[in-house]
Length: 272
Image (cartoon, rainbow, N blue to C red; front, side, top):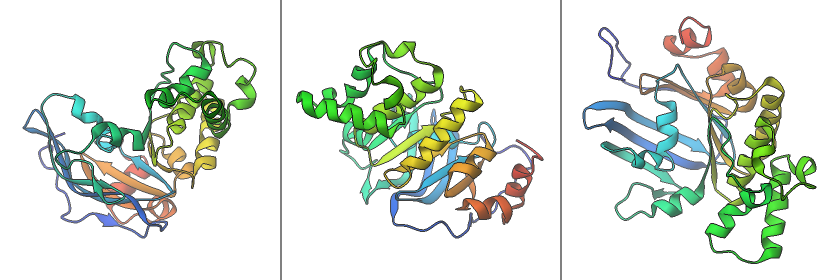
């Protein structure tokens, strides 16, 4: 993701008016390198607003998934990572020396590109975050499982088969189950890395409806390669290119009146 020869970038990011709201996550002058020399993120600064849906868009390899994984420190698992800058949740620096990474990840629910249910029952998939936390109260677990499955718009489809394997669900149901598992842990932020890329249009529509229903209950950050999806589900949109944040603002404005020529070119399909 090094700058190709001839590429030039503005000194400032185009920050448009956002949908409004207090910050849940603040990113300040954040840089990331792989292996010490290959820089993947360049001086990212943005505020992710509480209770809203923020979409990260841009061509493949632009750094959007890398940035998403920085929010719950999943990139720590890659050897040779080096970072500079600050990411804070509710004012707490998640990269501060001595920060509790496990506690940080509990505050950040994660949904991946491909559904990844555990090879256990539907019930135990959703109960898993509670059991990891040492909760043994069956009534509390039962209530949380039902509440989370309802929150993921899946309860009516699985309430009579909770003890069956989660692997027997359809792809779309599996992804909604993964969302139920993520919200069962009561995260503050829900991170979604192209959650519909492996799904058919009908299942995708259900996930998009679910995101709309979860708006306000959680702060949601979604990486998507589908600009139409970003337009449908998000309040704010950030356009990234070659590891840089080019433009960030209210979704309707970014898509209809972008200030950066590169944003305009991407949205109109001239590249990407």
